[in-house]
Length: 189
Figure 1 (cartoon, rainbow, N blue to C red):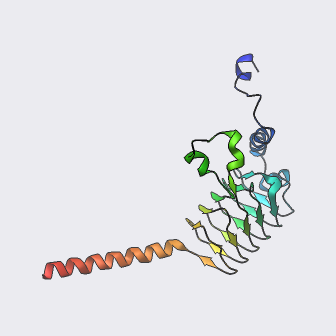
Figure 2: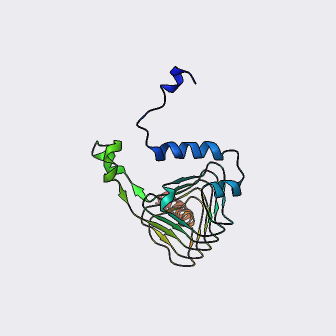
Figure 3: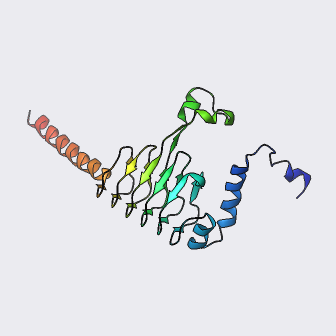
């Protein structure tokens, strides 16, 4: 490297950030099983390319977990995933909330202690389709299915099949029917 390119690297970059960058680069050419082993995940786990684990030291994960492409597992506030669970592509599991830093005009690295962290727990035998988002503090029971395009912000009990988009589709059909009936009444008036 030349002196010019060395000027892009900062001396104050935290080692954990540098490690995350290097892990992403090093794992790009690995298979799913190799990548999972590299991250220290238990036997049978598979991790697709582009997936990212933030604060892996706070992750408790069972065996035979599949993590899809571009999923982000934020374990900074504590993340537990049971065995035989699939985390779909582009699923975001958040355990921290940093919006207060922005609202206070204090979005600087030194204020990271003001970030609110709450653990997320996902049971065993679950299927979380992507893209979906789980918010900080949520607990998902065992044997749950979360449909694509879901936002999960409250706890789900064992065996829940969570399909909020179906509620939106039902509401859309009802609105369309009400609008048609209203137009009919207006034309008859």
